Image (cartoon, rainbow, N blue to C red):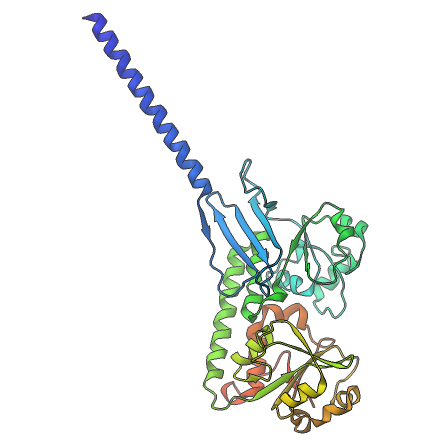
Length: 383
């Protein structure tokens, strides 16, 4: 009997150990599966990046040109610094977050940091030309933000001295990145300038927010931008008349415009106007001979111009640049919508203020739907 009881006891213990082992194996299996589970973040307008979040907080970011059906893709895994061990797909470049310092190659990238009140995370920029932000200018003066040179002529030594965790780049521009590639610093494409919707460009705030640990602030800021934009768009939709508008100027014998699937065409439409190239299938720049453009836009109600004219731009200067400009209806009736980037912080603020850009245009096209005391920020009717 004692032998039987002893044998029975051993069997029970063995069963218990076996069950525990199986339970541990199942838990291990569940843990592994949870690491692989992911949630895709919902982006409302941006098409240039996509985000998947793993259960342990790692974010997998895929970046691709939103204006091309097929293009180079970049993959980054944003791994929280507190994670001692982690697994990410092999083709993803690891960036430990939040990052401490970054270099901005463009004003649009810098605009995101300014909007998020995160200039302490910026250690380098390319230029202060047409830069208005006093905080940035002071940090450059104090040596807290380095000027690393211009596209095609970057100073690798200054880049290293800036000691960034990442460098945000615009890979489809002129480039000259070989010098900084050799530094070993991670280069991260920021394609906000390729977005086809004004709110899509502004949504790259979330992209920067993930790198610097300010996702909540970025999400809140973007939601408020969307609410204001949609409100102004709704007001414009109630206008009875839709004016027509052309954009651009003559350069090098051709008129450089943007296509009908562009950022600009979208904001004109949302402001209650019809862009003369709205039916053009292109999303980027279009070079058009003057005669062809004139045939389409001679009777356009408005003419939008954005440039960096040295001095006070006026109708005499517009005629001097191309005598045939005086033939346009918008010129004759003094309906040119103008922004001088030498006198306005357009590049450092407008990318994250599409609601303000929209308001300016609505005030020009449909002043009756906005308060009579509205003051434009970027665009005005040229005097």
